[in-house]
Picture 1 (cartoon, rainbow, N blue to C red):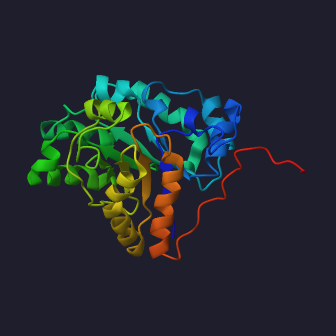
Picture 2: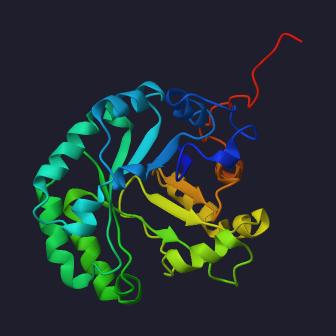
Length: 283
């Protein structure tokens, strides 16, 4: 029984010397992160497809049980809106090959303007994708959350390829005015949509955005602790990513979320033992 947890990145300046060793070489940063969490969002691939050598380094730094949810590049999803991007898609999938089974899902994040009227385009795109991979789709158009018919149509598009619908839960972020610069920035950039907790596949994925205070972050994820517990008891294998506006404590909070679920599911596999944030000495 496995619950994967992680963050939006594997390196953050405010994690150094608090959670992770200082001055890690680039080829060691993911390795250190992977002693804290067993999954990560691959957000950097949205901006550029990395070299195969870079992806090989990612594989070398992680165990076979580590999981990446890797975002498709922006030219595919936002610029060409899933049409006419076969060359970019092929290059991207080939670059990701060294990760092998570490790829939990290829993540198709769509712009807020991608509406129910565009579902035919999404259906055609998903049908063309190579078999043998898992795919997950994140939509941000309000109609998918307010119109039950639109939601069901999207589910019907995802079902034939066993693709998951990825919710981005920002509800606690918008339940009160921002209290920090990072929260104010999140208010202007993050989608304001209802919470969605329905899983379509055996491997649901959740993105959760809390606040810059731990108390409010933990309070806001209570519904997810219960939902993830139910999924585990149903035999599903969920992955949950914990965000906060400044992400300063996201690494520790991801482990706390795992601990809270594990308290109610004693058979849940534990996370790795974190790497010390300072080098070991003899004295």
